Length: 326
Image (tube, rainbow, N blue to C red; front, side, top):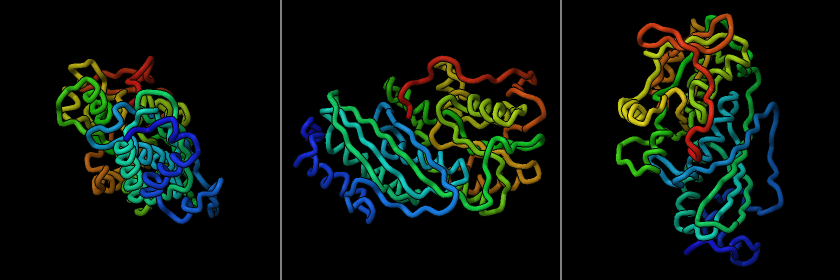
Protein backbone atom coordinates (compact mmCIF):
# COMPACT_ATOMS: atom_id res chain seq x y z
CA UNK A 1 0.00 0.00 0.00
CA UNK A 2 1.23 3.51 -0.82
CA UNK A 3 0.75 6.93 0.70
CA UNK A 4 -1.90 8.93 -1.15
CA UNK A 5 -3.08 12.50 -0.81
CA UNK A 6 -6.00 11.15 1.23
CA UNK A 7 -3.54 10.27 4.02
CA UNK A 8 -2.99 14.00 4.46
CA UNK A 9 -6.66 14.98 4.48
CA UNK A 10 -7.16 14.86 8.22
CA UNK A 11 -10.06 12.45 7.80
CA UNK A 12 -10.60 8.74 8.28
CA UNK A 13 -7.65 7.70 6.09
CA UNK A 14 -5.31 9.95 8.07
CA UNK A 15 -6.62 8.52 11.34
CA UNK A 16 -6.07 4.97 10.12
CA UNK A 17 -2.45 5.80 9.26
CA UNK A 18 -1.92 7.38 12.69
CA UNK A 19 -3.27 4.27 14.41
CA UNK A 20 -1.64 1.61 12.23
CA UNK A 21 1.86 3.12 12.00
CA UNK A 22 2.66 6.04 14.29
CA UNK A 23 0.40 5.13 17.21
CA UNK A 24 1.64 1.55 17.15
CA UNK A 25 5.33 2.47 17.52
CA UNK A 26 5.25 5.82 19.35
CA UNK A 27 2.72 4.87 22.02
CA UNK A 28 3.33 6.68 25.34
CA UNK A 29 1.21 8.45 28.00
CA UNK A 30 1.89 11.97 26.65
CA UNK A 31 1.37 11.28 22.95
CA UNK A 32 -1.60 8.99 23.50
CA UNK A 33 -3.71 11.95 24.69
CA UNK A 34 -3.71 13.23 21.07
CA UNK A 35 -4.15 16.83 22.20
CA UNK A 36 -3.02 20.00 20.43
CA UNK A 37 0.19 20.23 22.44
CA UNK A 38 2.23 18.07 24.78
CA UNK A 39 2.41 19.12 28.44
CA UNK A 40 5.93 18.57 29.78
CA UNK A 41 7.53 18.91 33.19
CA UNK A 42 10.78 20.86 32.98
CA UNK A 43 12.87 22.23 35.83
CA UNK A 44 16.16 24.09 35.51
CA UNK A 45 18.26 25.05 32.49
CA UNK A 46 17.24 23.36 29.21
CA UNK A 47 18.86 22.77 25.81
CA UNK A 48 16.61 23.02 22.76
CA UNK A 49 17.47 21.99 19.19
CA UNK A 50 15.70 21.36 15.89
CA UNK A 51 16.85 19.71 12.67
CA UNK A 52 15.46 18.43 9.38
CA UNK A 53 16.54 15.19 7.71
CA UNK A 54 16.51 14.66 3.95
CA UNK A 55 18.86 11.72 3.41
CA UNK A 56 18.90 9.76 0.15
CA UNK A 57 18.57 6.75 0.19
CA UNK A 58 16.11 6.47 3.06
CA UNK A 59 17.64 3.14 4.18
CA UNK A 60 21.39 2.54 4.15
CA UNK A 61 23.98 0.23 5.68
CA UNK A 62 24.00 0.95 9.38
CA UNK A 63 20.73 2.85 9.61
CA UNK A 64 17.87 4.70 8.02
CA UNK A 65 16.29 8.15 8.17
CA UNK A 66 14.37 7.16 11.33
CA UNK A 67 17.45 6.22 13.32
CA UNK A 68 19.31 9.17 11.83
CA UNK A 69 16.81 11.81 12.91
CA UNK A 70 16.72 10.60 16.52
CA UNK A 71 20.50 10.29 16.81
CA UNK A 72 21.11 13.62 15.09
CA UNK A 73 18.88 15.62 17.41
CA UNK A 74 19.81 13.72 20.58
CA UNK A 75 23.50 14.20 19.80
CA UNK A 76 23.00 17.96 19.41
CA UNK A 77 21.55 18.08 22.93
CA UNK A 78 24.30 15.86 24.34
CA UNK A 79 26.96 18.18 22.94
CA UNK A 80 25.63 20.95 25.18
CA UNK A 81 25.99 18.71 28.24
CA UNK A 82 22.24 18.12 28.36
CA UNK A 83 20.38 14.97 29.30
CA UNK A 84 17.87 14.49 26.42
CA UNK A 85 14.26 14.13 27.55
CA UNK A 86 11.74 14.80 24.76
CA UNK A 87 11.49 14.81 20.97
CA UNK A 88 8.88 16.00 18.51
CA UNK A 89 8.77 14.73 14.95
CA UNK A 90 7.18 16.11 11.79
CA UNK A 91 6.83 13.81 8.77
CA UNK A 92 6.52 15.23 5.25
CA UNK A 93 5.58 12.26 3.08
CA UNK A 94 5.49 12.30 -0.70
CA UNK A 95 2.62 10.64 -2.48
CA UNK A 96 3.65 7.11 -3.44
CA UNK A 97 5.72 6.39 -0.31
CA UNK A 98 5.40 2.70 0.55
CA UNK A 99 3.58 2.32 3.88
CA UNK A 100 5.56 -0.81 4.77
CA UNK A 101 8.76 1.24 4.35
CA UNK A 102 7.26 4.01 6.48
CA UNK A 103 6.41 1.46 9.16
CA UNK A 104 10.00 0.16 9.10
CA UNK A 105 11.38 3.69 9.52
CA UNK A 106 8.98 4.62 12.32
CA UNK A 107 9.79 1.34 14.11
CA UNK A 108 13.50 2.13 13.81
CA UNK A 109 12.92 5.63 15.13
CA UNK A 110 10.98 4.33 18.13
CA UNK A 111 13.69 1.78 18.95
CA UNK A 112 16.43 4.43 18.81
CA UNK A 113 14.39 6.79 21.00
CA UNK A 114 14.06 4.06 23.64
CA UNK A 115 17.80 3.41 23.50
CA UNK A 116 18.54 7.12 23.85
CA UNK A 117 16.11 7.45 26.74
CA UNK A 118 13.90 10.09 25.11
CA UNK A 119 10.13 10.29 24.80
CA UNK A 120 8.50 11.26 21.49
CA UNK A 121 5.96 13.68 22.91
CA UNK A 122 4.39 15.31 19.85
CA UNK A 123 4.32 15.01 16.08
CA UNK A 124 2.70 15.97 12.79
CA UNK A 125 2.25 14.54 9.30
CA UNK A 126 1.83 16.18 5.93
CA UNK A 127 1.40 14.60 2.49
CA UNK A 128 2.66 16.38 -0.63
CA UNK A 129 2.82 15.50 -4.29
CA UNK A 130 5.98 13.67 -5.29
CA UNK A 131 7.51 10.31 -6.03
CA UNK A 132 7.66 8.45 -2.74
CA UNK A 133 10.14 10.53 -0.75
CA UNK A 134 10.16 11.24 2.98
CA UNK A 135 11.48 14.14 5.04
CA UNK A 136 11.50 14.32 8.84
CA UNK A 137 11.93 17.29 11.15
CA UNK A 138 12.76 16.64 14.79
CA UNK A 139 12.98 18.98 17.75
CA UNK A 140 14.60 17.96 21.01
CA UNK A 141 14.59 19.21 24.58
CA UNK A 142 17.12 18.22 27.21
CA UNK A 143 17.90 19.33 30.75
CA UNK A 144 21.37 20.56 31.70
CA UNK A 145 22.42 19.45 35.19
CA UNK A 146 23.28 22.23 37.60
CA UNK A 147 26.92 23.27 37.43
CA UNK A 148 27.53 21.80 33.98
CA UNK A 149 28.89 24.37 31.49
CA UNK A 150 29.86 23.24 28.01
CA UNK A 151 30.86 25.95 25.54
CA UNK A 152 33.60 26.65 23.02
CA UNK A 153 34.21 29.86 24.93
CA UNK A 154 35.67 27.71 27.75
CA UNK A 155 38.67 26.45 25.73
CA UNK A 156 42.10 27.32 27.13
CA UNK A 157 45.63 27.13 25.78
CA UNK A 158 47.09 23.72 26.55
CA UNK A 159 43.76 21.86 26.36
CA UNK A 160 43.71 18.65 24.34
CA UNK A 161 41.29 17.75 21.54
CA UNK A 162 39.84 14.23 21.40
CA UNK A 163 38.03 12.66 18.45
CA UNK A 164 35.75 9.71 19.20
CA UNK A 165 36.61 7.58 16.15
CA UNK A 166 37.11 7.08 12.42
CA UNK A 167 36.10 9.87 10.06
CA UNK A 168 34.02 9.65 6.90
CA UNK A 169 32.03 6.44 7.42
CA UNK A 170 28.57 7.97 6.92
CA UNK A 171 29.61 10.09 3.95
CA UNK A 172 31.28 7.13 2.23
CA UNK A 173 28.32 4.84 2.99
CA UNK A 174 25.74 7.20 1.48
CA UNK A 175 27.84 7.97 -1.58
CA UNK A 176 28.52 4.26 -2.14
CA UNK A 177 24.78 3.55 -2.09
CA UNK A 178 24.05 6.30 -4.59
CA UNK A 179 26.82 5.21 -6.93
CA UNK A 180 25.86 1.53 -6.49
CA UNK A 181 29.37 0.68 -5.30
CA UNK A 182 29.46 -2.60 -3.39
CA UNK A 183 31.62 -2.42 -0.28
CA UNK A 184 31.41 -3.07 3.46
CA UNK A 185 31.38 0.56 4.57
CA UNK A 186 28.60 1.16 7.11
CA UNK A 187 27.31 4.48 8.39
CA UNK A 188 28.47 5.45 11.87
CA UNK A 189 24.95 6.69 12.67
CA UNK A 190 24.62 6.37 16.44
CA UNK A 191 23.74 8.03 19.73
CA UNK A 192 26.76 9.40 21.60
CA UNK A 193 25.14 9.19 25.03
CA UNK A 194 27.48 6.43 26.19
CA UNK A 195 30.49 8.71 25.64
CA UNK A 196 29.06 11.80 27.32
CA UNK A 197 27.81 9.79 30.30
CA UNK A 198 31.26 8.21 30.70
CA UNK A 199 33.03 11.59 30.63
CA UNK A 200 30.69 13.43 32.98
CA UNK A 201 30.24 10.41 35.22
CA UNK A 202 33.98 10.32 35.85
CA UNK A 203 34.14 14.05 36.59
CA UNK A 204 36.03 15.04 33.43
CA UNK A 205 36.00 18.83 33.04
CA UNK A 206 34.70 18.93 29.47
CA UNK A 207 35.35 22.40 28.02
CA UNK A 208 33.31 21.90 24.86
CA UNK A 209 31.94 19.17 22.60
CA UNK A 210 30.71 19.10 19.00
CA UNK A 211 29.33 16.28 16.88
CA UNK A 212 31.16 16.06 13.57
CA UNK A 213 28.43 16.13 10.93
CA UNK A 214 28.11 18.11 7.70
CA UNK A 215 31.25 20.05 6.81
CA UNK A 216 33.41 17.51 8.58
CA UNK A 217 36.11 17.85 11.22
CA UNK A 218 37.85 20.74 9.46
CA UNK A 219 34.76 22.93 9.52
CA UNK A 220 33.77 22.03 13.10
CA UNK A 221 37.23 22.82 14.50
CA UNK A 222 37.33 26.16 12.68
CA UNK A 223 34.03 27.05 14.33
CA UNK A 224 35.47 26.16 17.75
CA UNK A 225 38.62 28.20 17.06
CA UNK A 226 36.57 31.23 15.99
CA UNK A 227 34.28 31.08 19.02
CA UNK A 228 37.07 30.50 21.55
CA UNK A 229 39.46 32.92 19.82
CA UNK A 230 42.23 30.37 19.95
CA UNK A 231 44.57 28.46 17.66
CA UNK A 232 44.00 24.78 17.02
CA UNK A 233 46.89 22.54 15.98
CA UNK A 234 46.20 19.00 14.75
CA UNK A 235 48.40 16.04 13.94
CA UNK A 236 47.41 14.28 10.70
CA UNK A 237 48.99 11.02 11.89
CA UNK A 238 46.73 11.00 14.95
CA UNK A 239 43.41 11.36 13.08
CA UNK A 240 41.71 7.96 12.72
CA UNK A 241 40.30 6.92 9.32
CA UNK A 242 39.57 3.31 8.36
CA UNK A 243 41.60 1.81 5.51
CA UNK A 244 38.42 1.19 3.46
CA UNK A 245 37.17 4.76 3.79
CA UNK A 246 40.63 6.16 3.11
CA UNK A 247 40.89 4.08 -0.07
CA UNK A 248 37.37 5.09 -1.13
CA UNK A 249 38.16 8.77 -0.52
CA UNK A 250 41.45 8.57 -2.44
CA UNK A 251 39.76 7.08 -5.50
CA UNK A 252 37.08 9.80 -5.58
CA UNK A 253 39.35 12.68 -4.56
CA UNK A 254 37.62 13.25 -1.22
CA UNK A 255 39.25 14.50 1.99
CA UNK A 256 38.14 12.65 5.15
CA UNK A 257 38.67 15.86 7.11
CA UNK A 258 35.63 17.34 5.33
CA UNK A 259 33.49 14.21 5.01
CA UNK A 260 30.25 14.02 6.99
CA UNK A 261 29.67 11.75 9.99
CA UNK A 262 26.62 10.88 12.09
CA UNK A 263 28.14 9.25 15.15
CA UNK A 264 31.39 11.08 15.87
CA UNK A 265 32.25 13.90 18.23
CA UNK A 266 35.15 16.03 19.38
CA UNK A 267 35.72 16.94 23.02
CA UNK A 268 38.14 19.51 24.41
CA UNK A 269 39.44 18.72 27.91
CA UNK A 270 42.27 19.96 30.16
CA UNK A 271 45.62 18.40 29.31
CA UNK A 272 45.89 16.75 32.74
CA UNK A 273 42.64 14.85 32.12
CA UNK A 274 43.20 13.95 28.46
CA UNK A 275 44.55 10.42 28.94
CA UNK A 276 41.78 9.56 31.38
CA UNK A 277 39.17 10.98 29.00
CA UNK A 278 40.66 8.92 26.16
CA UNK A 279 40.51 5.75 28.25
CA UNK A 280 36.85 6.46 29.09
CA UNK A 281 35.96 7.09 25.44
CA UNK A 282 37.64 3.90 24.29
CA UNK A 283 35.66 1.94 26.86
CA UNK A 284 32.36 2.81 25.13
CA UNK A 285 30.70 1.32 22.06
CA UNK A 286 30.85 4.55 20.06
CA UNK A 287 34.30 5.66 21.18
CA UNK A 288 36.42 2.53 20.83
CA UNK A 289 38.59 4.11 18.10
CA UNK A 290 39.02 7.44 19.89
CA UNK A 291 42.28 9.40 19.69
CA UNK A 292 43.88 12.58 20.96
CA UNK A 293 44.30 14.55 17.74
CA UNK A 294 45.43 18.03 18.70
CA UNK A 295 45.86 20.88 21.13
CA UNK A 296 44.49 24.35 21.86
CA UNK A 297 47.10 27.11 21.69
CA UNK A 298 47.30 30.88 21.89
CA UNK A 299 46.57 32.62 18.60
CA UNK A 300 43.93 32.00 15.96
CA UNK A 301 43.12 29.67 13.09
CA UNK A 302 43.25 25.91 12.59
CA UNK A 303 46.41 24.19 11.38
CA UNK A 304 47.34 20.62 10.45
CA UNK A 305 50.80 19.10 10.81
CA UNK A 306 51.06 16.64 7.92
CA UNK A 307 52.72 13.23 7.92
CA UNK A 308 55.71 14.88 6.23
CA UNK A 309 56.09 17.38 9.07
CA UNK A 310 54.79 20.40 7.17
CA UNK A 311 52.09 22.68 8.57
CA UNK A 312 49.11 23.81 6.51
CA UNK A 313 46.02 25.85 7.16
CA UNK A 314 42.91 23.74 7.68
CA UNK A 315 40.07 25.92 6.43
CA UNK A 316 36.30 25.48 6.46
CA UNK A 317 34.53 23.54 3.71
CA UNK A 318 33.83 25.71 0.65
CA UNK A 319 31.22 24.99 -1.98
CA UNK A 320 28.75 22.15 -1.92
CA UNK A 321 29.49 18.96 -0.07
CA UNK A 322 27.58 15.75 -0.70
CA UNK A 323 23.87 16.71 -0.65
CA UNK A 324 21.28 14.85 1.39
CA UNK A 325 23.60 12.93 3.68
CA UNK A 326 21.42 13.71 6.70
